[in-house]
Length: 351
Image 1 (tube, rainbow, N blue to C red):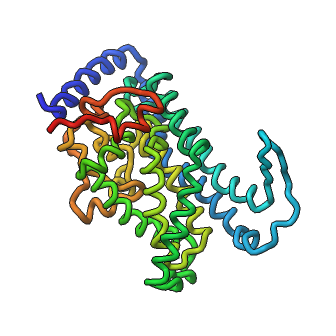
Image 2: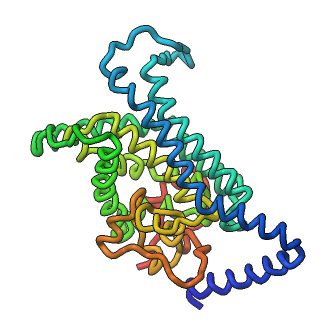
Image 3: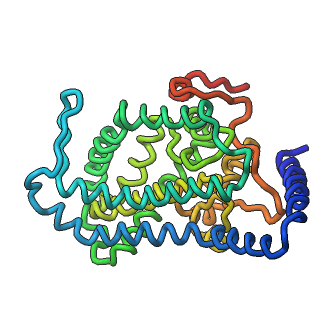
């Protein structure tokens, strides 16, 4: 039996069990419960994105002035193991502009995973999922300081590219929201092809398989990447716009949206995106991308937007009522931070 037919059979079995439970509920309670679930299924993502990004855009209005002004006096200083950490008003402003929307998105997705989950089987286990994902996040971002190498690589690449294309091509006169949308469209084109090649070229798949290794999807999977992937993705996505003269504010806002969206994209949440499935890379689409069956998984490469999948014919959402539950990588199981870091070297491939 193919994975496609297998998940269909499992869904029907699950529906029979749910149907038995529903029969024992009062009709009024069931109807009310359905209305509440439907509201959260359809409205959660739009509400969180509108509220979170609305706050970020509001904060962004005063960011150019802070970027241009002298740093002034620090508002917070602390020394940890001999390392001085100094926080200025500009730093606090940027952190709030980014963190508040991200925290809102994380908390909302987390609560939905508890009370309106897509699959009970995808609730993460501490050792195999949470410890491994959290450990890899700390290794990449705290110990190995991936953002330092990202900044260095972006500065060098953008400097070279800007000498070819010029730094006055960016439409700075456009409203900020349209600049962010343009940034995302350009960035998605770059990461679409990187992502697609990572699935089609074995030497790149060895790196990217770290992201696909988990056999359960939940919100923190959005941070699970190999160190090389974590550097390559932001460099490729940001450099073209930086080289064309995009303002740093545009990059901050686009990054905020990307992190917020990534949690929904990987979340174990029962949601409905409707026509938004033709705009963003929704969880309804992205679950198929994480299937073990590569004939189903090698679709929906978009990270935030799904438009390039539509253009290049890799958009995939079956009309049949089936559920993608068998996620992960065939013959590749395991946990552990060091094991994931060394996976590109240790991964065994038949043939």
